[in-house]
Image (spheres, one colour):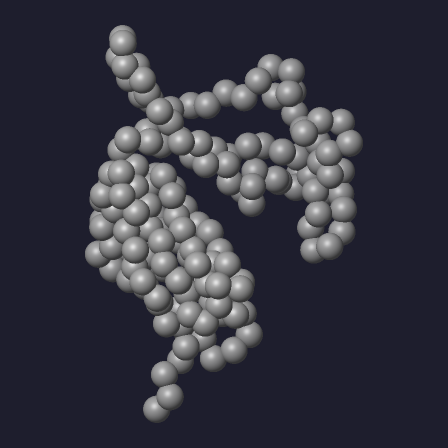
Length: 160
């Protein structure tokens, strides 16, 4: 990042203004405790979609949106959206944010990482063309230090 940075939106390139963060550094706001003699490990999740914003004059600016989670207190969710060509957008809502990703367009695999331990509703929303339906899985438990595998999630509309 720096002078000459560009962003591609719908196949067209635009200049990307990077604020003074390159000179002053990135500031992360998060409450955590550092104990003398111990190591604290944090996971930073950069949200590119929400970090590039268009201003009132039509210019694009980088305003980093970064989710911070203590690594030892985090877990994750993984699975496969079937069929892969459903192009599923996958998300959960935490107490303070929505964490989202897209399933891989070839395999359907998805993973949401650095989630605080707790119970979630996992939503898969098809964005591809076809006979697909959204699915919400309730009661998906995330345990610190573990990845919860929800298996294969069927997004096809059942034939009646």
